[in-house]
Structure formats: structure tokens, C-alpha cells
Length: 282
Length: 119
Image 1 (cartoon, each protein chain N blue to C red):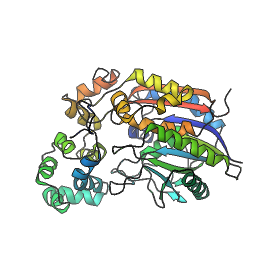
Image 2: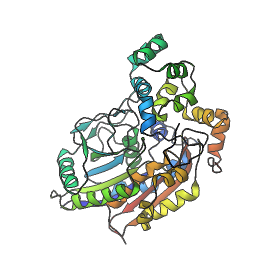
Image 3: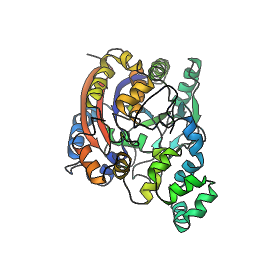
Image 4: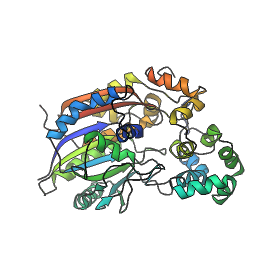
């Protein structure tokens, strides 16, 4: 039987990946953020999953605006690392788990989630930066297979927070019926508060972020009740990415145990956070 | 840009379906700049490249004059616009300064001080 062993939520700012790729993690600008990751990285290194389901969004690299799926799953054997305009990140190609992808699609569609599927997909920093946060030195290969699950957070109307949470619950149910004996980790990526355009560019809301960081464990229903407008107002126009954290939360047990969290401003224009949860509770 | 009906989010452009329709050709131009070959062709003759993508005259002017605010107003998505900024060697902090009426240096300093918490 498959088992979700842990879930991690993390920002996926491209410059976090660039800092790793260019050996800048000990620079004064970046050191506090990477020091904050360290306890989580050590714990995750002791608890390796066989496969990670990474909830993320593309940023004009693997997907353009011709088709805007609300929710999509990759079904490929391999996902090339996208060239975002300055060459692909120097990280390994991402190896998929097509059997698990197909299982999820069948169960999610039967459960009322009409998923789009990607047979081919270049994965951008939205997916590879969280992998690097999980595993900073992968060598020739990432230590787990990956199922990419994309959420449209770029074009309004995004799926509601409630729908994202419900999708997570459905993923949890689908995994419970997956027969192979695999350990699964769930990554919810994006956030926290940030806004890139408009007169409010540079907006950060530490109070809202602190509330969200706590409630993602203890009161996800409260977060699932937030409207799009409230999320944009409180977390900024790009902070609405936080709805992807609710997909992770929904896929986990009601009681989860917080292993570690860290919060730091800034990573580029963004309030960056990581929180790691053991799915086995206390 | 028109905010979604019934919502008032001052200082916050919302990239909605209408904006995406308006900006589709321009956003496709920006996305094409991922490849080195496209960047070379664009740099060689920016106007011709814009015509190839059938930009409106307003969008073409915004791109040629690097009027970043106009690109947003004319349906550009910030993630797409950023491809052009990167080609020019400009950062997201530079753009943040343009949008918020600050120098890049002041914008960076505001983020380093914990972000713009009062807007």
C-alpha cells in the first residue's frame, strides 16, 4: 500500500534556485534563508520518499496562454528541465512515475476532478526549485520520482482555495487505493505574500503569512474559505499561489506534526517560507 | 486594466481573461524570447519581430519604448513581460521600482527592510 509520509510547503522563487546554482547560499543576502532550510533538509534526508507529487505552476516556460488548464497532471516518463531564457538550470532531468499519474487521473476524474493531462512537459523553476530545496546536491539524479501537478494561479479566475483543498482530499483518497508499496511526499509550492506588478509591487504581509503558516496545519478549513479577492488583497496578486499549499494539506491526515518551519523576507520580491509536516501526527 | 467586476483592488492589476485576450499576441512574443535564436532575431529588428507577432500599434510602441507599465495595461502578464526585461539585463526589482515609482535601489532597500507592508 502506498503511504504519504510527509508534506512540505515552500516558496519556489527562481532566484532561490539561482543562488544554489551559482554558489551564493552563504552570501549575507541568502544565508538566513538557507540556514532556515537546514533542519528540514536533514530530516527529509532521513526520510526519503519513493515519489514526490509536486503541486506547482508554470511561469511561461513549459505552458503558454493558448490553453489554461485549471488543474493538470503530467503523465510522462521524463520531464526535461525548461530553458527559461538563460539556459536550463544545471540540475538532473526529472524522472516521472507514469503508473501513479494514470492511477491519480482515473481516480480524480471518478471523484469529480476533470484533470487535464500533459504527455510532454518541460518543468520550470516552480518545480525544480522545491526539488533543490528538498535535495540540494542530487548528483546525477534526483532521489525520487516526481508527479507534476499544475494549478492555474496566473490567470484569473484561479480555482478557489476550497476547490484546491478538495482536490488534495481526493488525491489522498486516490493514494489510499494505490497498491504498490511506495512512500509518497507531497510538495505544496509558491507564496508567501508577494506582488510583482502595480503600484503595490513589493507588498509583503507578515501577519497574514504567520496566520497562514500556522493554519495550514491546524485550521485548513479556515484557509479554504478565503475568497480569491481576499487572497489577492491579503497576500498580493502573486501571493494567491498559496492556494497550492491547500492541495498538499488536503492530501494529508487531519492530524499532522510540524517538523520545522522558517520564514524570511526577502527572496527577490517575495516573503519566503518553508514548513515541513510528518503525516503520522504526534 | 479592468478589475474583475465588483472587485476593487487598488494598485493591483488582475490578469484576468479579458486582459489575457488583449495581450495574447504580445505575451506569445515574450514567451518566444526563451530561445537564443528568437532573441537574436528580435534584437536584429525589434519592429519587424513585433509585426510578425501582429501586435497592436499600442503594444508595439510599449515594447519598442520599454514602457513596462503600458505592457501591463495592454494585457501583458508579468511573468511574460519579465522575459523581455531579462533580455535587457533588468531584474524583477527594477520592474518593481518602475511599477511602484521608486528607483531599483530604493525598491531593493524596501524589500530588505521587510517588504512594503503599508501598501
